[in-house]
Image (cartoon, rainbow, N blue to C red; front, side, top):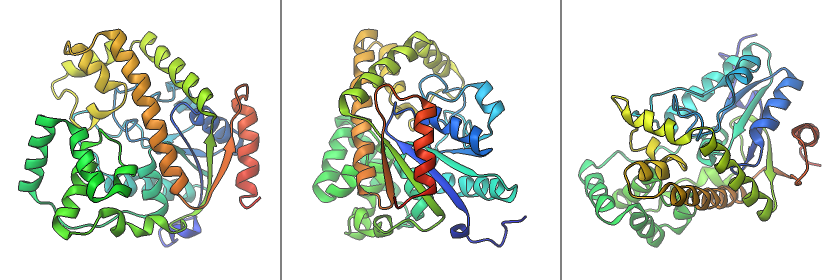
Length: 319
C-alpha cells in the first residue's frame, strides 16, 4: 500500500489527548499494544533530546516495544516550529498508514493537536525590529507582561497561549501589529470541525482534586528520579538549553534554582503550581475544540480499564 496519492482525510488517526498527568502516555501504550499500532507524540517538549525526566518520556523499553515518533527530534538548544512539527508528523502518519499499522496520536500540546487536525495558520511575515522590541520588553518586565498586553488586544489568543510561552505570545502580537486583526480571528479554521484526517478524538478528563493529586505526585517522582541533575547536565552542554526548551514546566523552575533564584523546595512548589496552570490551559483548549469525545478517568482506574473505554469511544465516536 502507498499513501503518496492518498489525501489526509482518507487516513484514520486515533487521537488520545488530555491534561498533564492524566495518564494518557500509559493508556496510549496499552492501546498501541492491543491494536498493533504506532504512536505519534504530540508533546512540544518530548521533541528535545536528553530532556527525559521532566517531560515524562516513555522508557527505552517501551519505545523498543512500540515505535514512537516525534520524540528526540532536536537538540535542546534548537528552536522548533509548529509548521515543522506538522510536516514531520504528517510524514510519520503517512509512513505508518502505508505499512498498514493503526496510527495513535497521543499527547497534550494542544497547538500540535490543532495543527494536525485543522492545519497550520499561514500568517504575515516576520517584523524583526518589532520582535526585538518585544524581546527587550520581556527581558525587562517579564513574559507575563507581554501576555497581559496580548490579552488586551486578543483575549481569545491569550486564553489559548500559556502565560510564559514567549515565542507564541510574540507571534500573536506581531500578527496584530502587522495586520490590525487578532490572530485568533485569522485562525478561524481552528474553530471548524476537524477534517485533515479521519479523526477519532478522545480526551481524558479528571476531577480537579484527582488531577492536582497526580500532578503533585508526579513532580516528586521527577525530582526523586534526578530532574535537578538532568537540568544541570543540559546547562553544561556546549549549546545549553535554548530559550524555547527552557520554557518547559519543570525545567524553567529548576534552572531558576540552579541560578540561585529559588530554593529547591520553592522550585518544586513552583513546578506544581505551574503544572496546574498548564492543565487549566489545556482544558481551555480542549473545551474549544470540536469533535472531542470526553472520557472521565476515576481515581482507581487502571490503564487497562481506561484503554477499554477509549477503544469503545473510538469504535463508536458518536455514542
